[in-house]
Every structure is written in C-alpha cells, then in structure tokens.
Image (cartoon, rainbow, N blue to C red):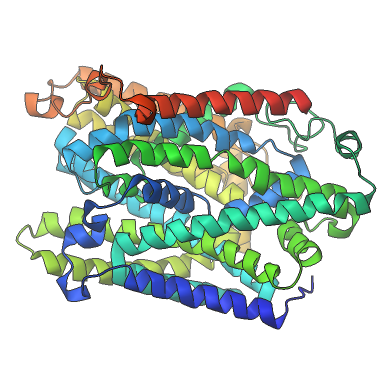
Length: 569
C-alpha cells in the first residue's frame, strides 16, 4: 500500500526519536565513567512503583503486539485478549509474593537465585535460557517487526530499518543502563497508550460513514462471537483451524505466564531495581491495571477496521494497522501515532538489551573472574550490549523464515523455552525437597524436548528449499501430516502450542520430582531460599494503600469488566 505521510508528521517522528534518545542519555546524572554496576544494571535500586509499572508494560508490549493485535482483531475479534487478561492474576501474584521476595534477597539477576537454591550449573542453564530468550524473541523478532513497519511507512529496505532502529535504541541503552531504559519506557508507555486511544477514537468516529449508528448495527456487521473472549472452540469467529479451548488457554498460559512474569530477566529486572519493598509490590500491580487496556485499544481497532475497511484491506491483513492510520488519522496526529509504534518497539528492544548485558556481566564474567572491578563490569556490559545487538540484527533478517507469521514464531519459541524453566522455578521456590541434580537434568531434558517439538513444527522449505525432504522425513518418523501445499509440519500429533507447553511442563515436573526424590536432600542453606508466603502477608492492614487491597481491587475490576463484555458480546 502507498502510505501518505506529510512533512509535519516526519518532523514529529524525528523530534520524538531525537527527544527519546536525549532523554535516555541525560537520565543518568552521573558520568559514564562514574557508574557502578548497581547504577548501570539496577538503576541504583531507585525505581518507584509508577516507573516500574510503566516500564514493565512498555517492555512487554512491542510492535509485535500492536501489528499482530490489529490483524487478529480484524480476522478473529477480541479472542486474543484472553492472553492479556490472563496476565493480570500473574502480575498481582508477582506483586504479592515474588517481587518482594526477590527484593529482600537483594539478587541482581534471576539466575543468581538459581545458584543459591540449587548450584552453579543451574545458574549457567538459566543464563543460557535467558540470553536465548532476549536474543531470539525480545530483540530479534521485535526488530524484524519494526523493520516491516518502517518498510510500510517509509519504504525503507528491511535491513536498513533494522539497523536504524537498533542504533537509536542502542545509544541510550548502552550509555545509561536500566535507569535510562526505565525512564524512557515510562514516557513511551504514555505515548503508546495515548496513540492507541486516539486511533480507537478515530475508528469509532468513522463508523457512521460505514452506515453504523448504533451498537446493534455494529454487532450486525460482525461475525457472531467477534466481541467475545471466552467463546466456544467451534465458534464462527475462530480461525479456520479452530480456536483455543478454555482449558488449553488456562493450562498453556499457566506455563507461559509463570515463565514470562516470574522468571524472565527482561521483565523481572524492573522489580529488582525497586527503591522500596512497597515499590516492588505495587509496581507489577500498576502493570496489571494497564493490561486491561490492550483489549479495548489494541484489539478493538482491528474489529473497527473489519466493519469500516473490510473490502479495502482484503487478504493482506498484516497491513490492518498501517491502513487504519493512513485512512483515519489526520496529518500531524499521524506522526504522533507512528511515534507511538516506534515507542513500543524501542522500549521492548531496550529492555532486552539491558537484561542480556546484565546477565553477561554478572552471571558470566563476574563468576569466571570474581575479582573483576566494578567499573570494568559496567564497561563489559556495554560491549556485551553492542555484540548482542549485532547478533540480534543478524537473526532478525531471518525471522520471517521460521514460521507462517511472527506470532507463530514467538509462540513456538516460547513453548520451547518455558516448560523446563517453570518446572524448576516452581518446585525450587515452593518445594523444599527439590534438588540441584533434578534441576539440571530437568533443564537438559526439557531443552532437548523443546528443540525436538520446535523442529517438528519447523518450516524447512522457508529456510532452504533443499531441506523439503528433511521435513517429509521428520514428519514420517513422527507420524504426523504436513500442511497441504507446504512443507511445514502442522504440529506434533496435531497438538497446538498452548497444550504443547502444558504437556512439556507436566513431563518436566515428573522429571524434577522423580529425580529429587531419588537424590540426597538439599542442604539447609538451599532450603532456606524457598519462599514462605506467610512472611509476605502481614497481619496489619495499612489502609487504602495496602498492596492487598490494590491487588484484589484490580482482580475484582477485571471480573466485572470481563463479565460486562461477555454479556454485551
């Protein structure tokens, strides 16, 4: 599509990009040479709950979400809102127990906890998993999505778009560390939400021109169940291959959610930088409150586009969001909304670069050479950030070859990585009998199983046409069918990624429990690292600011909003 963008829009976008880089660079009051590792990697543990909450939201919501949600809303309605709203209980639990626990332990990284609970080998496994997650998912896929966006808006070739975005984001991330990332993420969250609300408002305002004047007329133009999140598996609004059943959503998201919100360094690092325990508690709950918004302002615009532009958008549904911006938003505000999309991209990439550099310096270099000076660790972290960014750029150019859609690639990678991490984390955190040997065996077997499942779903012909025979061979060995007209295996025995994640978690849990029971009990020092939930549930009530009242209020609000939505759907 030909995107119509005016001079004033370009000026606004450039002003935003320059402003956000300068904000990140000058967010640090100390000189680069004076920053300690605590300053650089954990923002001097000075983050207040509004910054933590906004930064968590910005790190989570990327361009993948914005482009993907608009397309999903156009094609299938609000059903993907299930994943956004299921995140809310996890965030509340993170605020109730996990974040304050990590705050009290004063750890710098999530892998550091694994060494305290199990041993150094477990820490190494988690470093491998965490850096792979940051490199493959948080940075690489996000850069690819951003490059596609730059191509649609500005006609830039993908590789130039990737490099342009990476360099801009890398400047303030490498210079300023977590404090710069968190401050810029706070601003970007405001811009992101504001841009999404503006686009939704323009979409609603355009409904009368499409012959829609009432809510009943709006619903009449939609496929039945479009506005429902909890819908039957055979609903007409579901994808042709069928929807995700309620039990698959609950079981699968339990695994993906526990991995992402409790043990992903990119996410939890914001809570590790909290100034007080109260900030560590309330920050994630603020994120939980913000997570109500994507259903209303990221998915709903796609539904509006279906009513207004169904015939115009046609089959090329990945252009749903750019098409809406081009057709609905006036010059001036168009540049603001494009800046919001870039904000989502830059915040996710910056968060992952910062976490990966932290892992490299603290969990690799400092362990190999404990005598390494503090300032040298910061310098190494900066170099690591640059190298990781270069590797992510290289990976991002191949991202479109690893799945039919970006969302498919992200989900497949998540289902591969999450199960062993969640099994070891939960049984290590809440079960005193879990042993180090069991954790390491679970990590090893879980990674092999995850890779096997991923390879069975792998679109070999997208990578090299000569590997089509390999796809057929793997399919015949696994006794599964290939998707008609392609050389891509549809799924291991027809199991979707959500249930794959669940069953792999169940298998990893059996391994973790079984090996633990057949190996010597952990030491008292290791057992003492298990969490005692009662310690984080004080008897005294602290009034309206009590973290429990805030968390329960958010859950109740979610139930009310969800019930109303399902009622009117």
